[in-house]
Image (cartoon, rainbow, N blue to C red; front, side, top):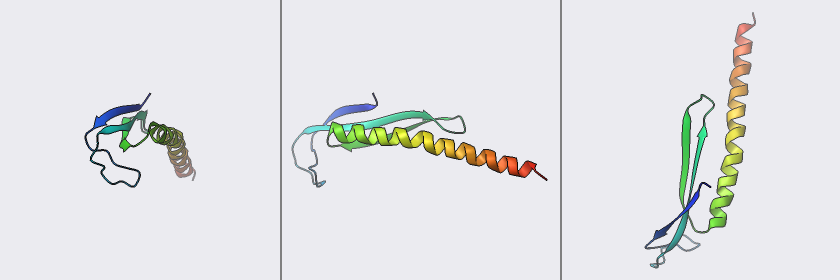
Length: 85
């Protein structure tokens, strides 16, 4: 799973204000292959709940293949058009 937890000394509340109390925050790390074949990674840190982090991870995993497929299809279509006289 790409969601990990870590302990912080000064956690933020739901409004983003520092509470002055220690707590746990969650980070999302995703590794993927870009349309050009290069390996890439995506990271976002500091989610207050594991549920938020898991939801963000699912959104990003669903978005990545779609954007890559669209880029590949777009470039293939452009290449085909150039070959025609």
